[in-house]
Amino acid sequence: MIQAVRNAFGLPDLRRKMLITFLILVIYRLAAHVPVPNIKAELLSEVFSKNQLLSLLDMFSGGAMSNFSVMAMGVYPYVTAQIVIQLLQPIIPALEELAKEGEAGRNKLNQYTYLLTIPLCALQAFSLGMQMQYQGVITNFGLTGSAWLPTLTTILTMTAGTMFAIWLGELITEQGIGQGLSIIILGGIVARIPQRVGAMITTDLRGLIAFLIITAVTVLVIVIVQEGQRRIPVQYGKRVLAMRGNRLRIAGGQSTHIPLRVNSAGMIPLIFAQSFMMLPGVIASYFTNSGVSWVKTVATSIYNLFNGQSTFYWIMYFVLVIGFTYFYTSIVFQQQNLAENLKKQGGFIPGIRPGKRTEDYLNEVLGRITLVGAIFLGVVAILPWMVQDVTETSTMLITSTGLLIVVGVVLDTMRQLEAQLLMRHYEGFIK
Image (cartoon, rainbow, N blue to C red):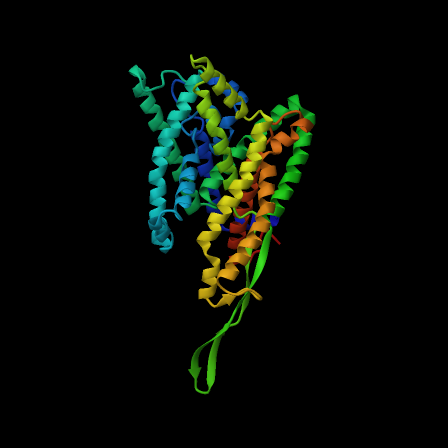
């Protein structure tokens, strides 16, 4: 692998792509340290140490959330907009038609995604500002009195920061190596490892060793499951294309396969589930200081259930991850319409009738292998809770969700580099 890296860096065009990617990551990390005005920085670490509801957003911002910088929201609003547009495609026929129109349709959907990102940024910035004001981190925030101008300034600044992060990600995709948004998230996650390792060396060496072992085992399992697939054999019938003299020109008859991945949903179910689990706690936090006693009691109870500390939270998180895995996998699989496409192209699964019977067979196989992927994602989601008795803390070097992102992005980037090397007759990363 070291030789493959040297080969990649020795090629001028690949070296240029790698250096551009690194430079953009440096720019993003520098911008992530530019704070929003009127912030009490000394209170931020205390807030994030007690409130795990902000952990997902902090992960997607690459740690910029814990600094409450102009990049605090990272690319999360754009990821949310992408998911919303994708889920709306089977519901809104116009969007479904655009998805089938090739490059032009995809460009139009990307425009809709960008437009949806802007109001999502504004809403999320306002929600975060209100929550930080409630925690005493930010001052002079709200829509009343003289606070509306600083509030508007903060919302516009944070929205601009998110759009700038998205633009940097697009630059990596076009000029660098890998999928830009994923690389930015990866850079933010990895950048925080040295600080956590240093803190654990001085305070909890036993916990560090345990986490290193757990992380190594988890990475191995993630790679196995992420690369796991069920290959469905497909046979294409022979077709007579033309007559040449006394000879027939026959095409087709080849064999291939449909790769059904064990975890075809990626990390999307984790995002869905954690966002869903965050919502009740965020709403309840606004009413925990209510002057009405019963409202305060109910809000406090809900907040304690959904603050990431209770057993109920982790059980619900596990169940929701499994449910969303089946939900998202089903939607994506239906959009592919494999059975109908096979029938149109003259392909069939040996022993299975084309059409409805093929569709039922593929759904049955997908349901079985998705169970494995769903349980895997569920275990990854609740891994911090499962290991806290062993390590005496649920704070990991990398969150389980972050670890899934890191492994997935690294594998995808390695594939892209390998493809570039193979084009130039070099041996790749994956033998």
